[in-house]
Image (tube, rainbow, N blue to C red; front, side):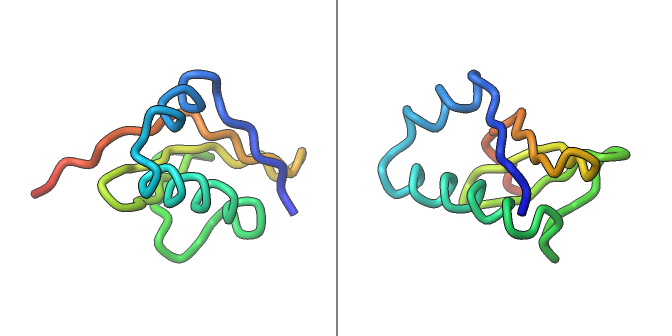
Length: 80
């Protein structure tokens, strides 16, 4: 199991979300502990991934040596 680390900026963003969106985003971040590379994740850099949840994109780094997932960006997705 991986430990989750959420930057203060992302933590502050999450706290301002509507309760439904808060639950969705928090649950998604929590599930990254069990599987930091779910099938719907997109590799965007050497160790950085992105997953979508509702209208938001969560960007995070995976540190396999330390068994840590660091969430550093939460942003609204652009609709095509």
